[in-house]
Length: 324
Image (cartoon, rainbow, N blue to C red; front, side):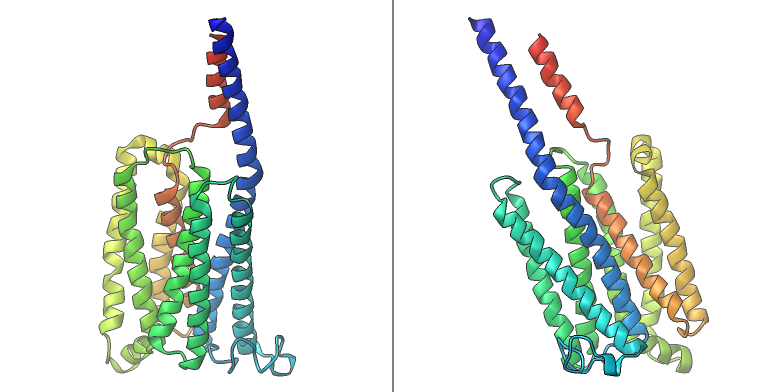
């Protein structure tokens, strides 16, 4: 009787494991897919925003949230109006996508981790703040601090979205490498500060004034100097991964991308200065690189640095228990 009771308990545990994995597959997979779309949409939003700023199209639509009083201003359409209009459209679609995920998390709150609805509420709050800053950029006629805040909130949206995706992937990880996360957090923080300086540089015209008249060069020189600690911190991460061979083996794709982005970012920065900031493609590429840099660092911070145990491992463990 004792043997039958133990066997029954193990079978029930096995069935519970299968049911648990099935509901995760059903609900969490949807959030993972929506999260991936959100990341792509946010990176596109940041790049389009950079193109809008570089092309001096921030005030191409003089009103907000409409453009010349209509949703689609055919009568006033040109390249600058299109950039500003498309930037707003993309922001609207990102907001709708995040609102949709928040609504699903409320509907399925009994079937998903408790932290998910709370985190989506934070995302929704950031979207509202981001929309408010978007309105203020028009109302305040592209005030430098407003433009800077607008970009930094977009980066916070990107970081939060990626962290949610990685936590969904690694929901069962109990002991992450804390020291590895701290090591990665340092260049992420430096990159955010560097982006802040970069936006201040472009939104105050300091770069043009410095290059043309050799005045107000403090912001530009600070932006240049900040590249050194970022590069050093990335090289330190690569060296650490090489020393800890298992980290390199499991994360080499991300680490290779970091090295590529680091050197291409430096090259794009140099080309931007060599052309006196007159080539929009270099500046937009510089912003795209920064966005990808932040995305990869955030992914490395929140992902499991080693291969995750899969469902088959858990099932096999239960089968061994039943067989025994």
